[in-house]
Length: 97
Image 1 (cartoon, rainbow, N blue to C red):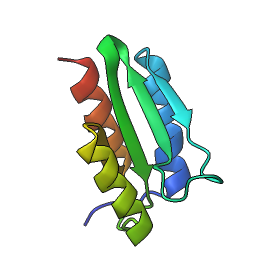
Image 2: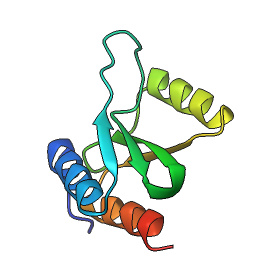
Image 3: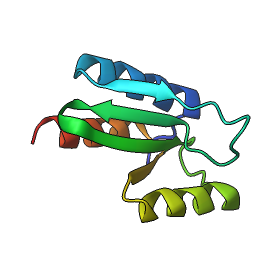
Image 4: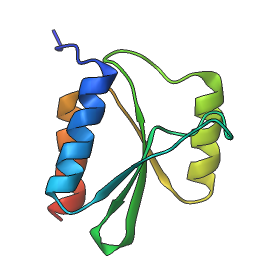
């Protein structure tokens, strides 16, 4: 059975790992644009990834899915992450290529 991680713990891990690997992990404030992902991660070599953070097993709301779709149509990568393992996999993928 998969270990459950809460959203704040997953977010903290993402911020820590981005910093450790020289990336910026910017919190997106959504009071003017509902549905934006939680974080925009800027990695070396011009790599931008939007990250929606959830507690393990939770899914994005419909408005979030619509915004994710629009961002992808614009050519951006959007990831929904709900475990610390997923954070580690994403950061290692983007920094160890």
